Every structure is written in structure tokens, then in C-alpha cells.
Length: 401
Ligand SMILES: Cc1cc2nc3c(=O)[nH]c(=O)nc-3n(C[C@H](O)[C@H](O)[C@H](O)COP(=O)(O)O)c2cc1C
Image 1 (cartoon, rainbow, N blue to C red):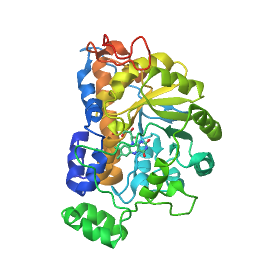
Image 2 (image 1 turned 180 degrees about the vertical axis):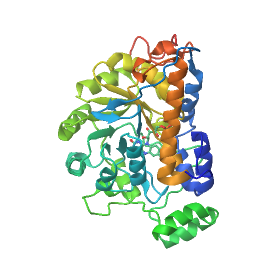
Image 3 (image 1 turned 60 degrees about the horizontal axis):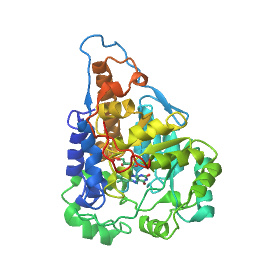
């Protein structure tokens, strides 16, 4: 990779993304709801956790491989589903190629810009993410399309709370990018020649349609048409989740769990995995950081289903902290979006390499041969760090770390 495009940390990828992208596109990647309390806690909480390293006795080789929902992965990191509208012309296909090149799996958003068939062709380990949008019949059609395309798992995301007010001001996302919009965006776009050139090469403006909300081969509704339909759909019940899992029939994850009681109900609904998550702070602001909620959830259901975590992962050491506190693996969101914005597929590979290197370095410092040997004893957990939600006797009370 050319020296001037390579970056050594995710923070630098973020700086590059900010420089490259038009303001509204960058700001939609940063996102977060209301005051941003949750998004800040997601990241800051990792800094509260410390390590207890050894100084002699590190092992020569360290094993990071594991499985998630039946898929072999090279390290405990997979791609979390995000709508990558307008960041890169190859969008989710570039992300899928990068994940495949680094031996890991990918969650594909149903609000993605590329058809599921194209993404599966680039990476055989795709988990299709679905929102509860349009009622059972419409959802069953989408499930069937993902199955036919060869997706190997499903992620159901049900935590979206339609919180639209943001103290930092929401980005204006156009309905579609036509000439009129391009002219309107011109002042912010003209100063971003790299981004313009990348889309210019394809001779097509960014496509703000969501093709996976339609039948195969159709262009799909615009982002806002689909969003409006979603807002008008009654929220799912636990019976709906059990129905969806049955309809899918394969490995199934419910994303967005933070409470112990919800985790237990997810087990009852027959899921194979959950992700302890608050949607990267884009939801109900004031929800604690995912890592604070992880230990109690992992303790309650970790021996019955796979427990993952997403939210705030920026370094390999964050991954090691999450695994030590009970996560089988983590999912990353903004980290790879910044890599994609900074340098396309190579930028996503760069981010995965940073995390891989960071995990290896932390394992070495801790004197571990494998991620499977990690446990809470490797971590310094300050008093009051964890949050146990959904256990009546403990909820709302201060806790011992
Ligand atoms: C721009 C953006 C778009 C997202 N779109 C989706 C989505 O379509 N489906 C979904 O399940 N989660 C979505 N998420 C949430 C991510 O999957 C993930 O939960 C979150 O980004 C994790 O936090 P992190 O960004 O700190 O890694 C999105 C997140 C961002 C930042």
C-alpha cells in the first residue's frame, strides 16, 4: 500500500474520512442521537478498563481464530451492518472484498446500497440484516431473497427508536442525487476532489436507493421511501421474532440487546446469537455503553447462545477487553466506514489489519496463547463500571466492578 494512503490507527482513518468526504456525508457516519451521551460512553468506557500484563513468558504464536454463527473467522472481529450510502462507489462490495481478504464475515444492512447477490459474490460469509419493515409477507419475501442469494446467517435489528433530534444537527440526506441536488451540494463537494473523482470515475452519482428492500433486479425504493414505510410498520413482538427466526431457518442473531431479561427472552425465541449493542449510540440516548452491559448478559446466557458486542471498538485492545468480559467476537461499525472513506477496500483492510495487530500485541502482553484463554482476570475493572439491566434486584443500583 502506498505510504501516503496507509494509516496506523483508526483515529487517523477518521481524520482522513473527515478530510475526504463532503460535510453531510461525513456527518452521517459520525451520527448519534440527541445529546450523544451513549455514543461518547461507548468509546470512553473502553479507556476505563485496564490490563494486567506479564513481562516475561509471552508465547511465540498467538491464536485468534474462532467461529461466529457457524462461520470460521480469522479473528474475533466481523463487519457490523451499516447503510454505506455515498461513502464509496463500490460501497458494501468493497467492504465484503476486504473482509474476505482478511478472512472474516460481514453483516449486510437491508438499507445497503448494493444488492445482496453482489455482496455474497464478493464474500461467502454474509449475514443479511433485516429491519421489521412492511409486515410479515413483505419480510418473508426479503428473507427468501437473502436465502436464494446465499447469505449464511440473519441479523434482526429491532432497537431503532426513531429518535431524530440531534444537538449537533442532523445531516441533510437528499431523496436522490440528481443534477439539482449535485448543484445544491456543489459548495461542500467542490472542496472534496478525491471523493468527487472516485464517483466521477463511475460516471454515476451516489445511489441513494435501497435495492435489498425490493425484488431481485429492481432498483428498490429510495432511502426515504423505505424509511417512511418502516416508521409506519407496527413494532415486532417476541412472537414475530420467533416467526422470523423460523422463517429464516438458519443461524440467527438478534442485535441490540442490553438487558438480561431481553437476552433470556431472545434465547426462548430460539436465536443462535445476540449482539450486546445500542446501535452505536444512534438510538435511545442515555443507554449505557455496550461494554458495561456485556458481563451481566454474557453471564446469564453465554452458555446457551453466542454473545457478541458492538459499539465503540476502535482498537485491537478494545476487542481483547470485550472478549475477556465474555464476548465471543465483536462487530465494528464506524471504524471500517472511516477506512472505506479514507481508502476504499484497501482502507477497510487497513482497519482490519490495525485491529489484528492490536489484538496480537495485547495477547502478547498478557502472555496468552489464544483469545480463548482470556478472562476477566486479565482486565482491571474499576468499581461501578458494569451495568446490570433487566434484573429487578440489581437494576438502577450502583454496582461493584
Ligand atoms: C452510519 C451508520 C449506519 C448504520 N446502519 C445500520 C443498519 O443499517 N443496520 C444495523 O443493524 N445497524 C446499523 N448501524 C449500527 C452498526 O451496525 C453498529 O451497531 C454500530 O455502528 C456499532 O458502533 P461503532 O460504530 O462504535 O462500532 C449503523 C451505524 C452507523 C454509524
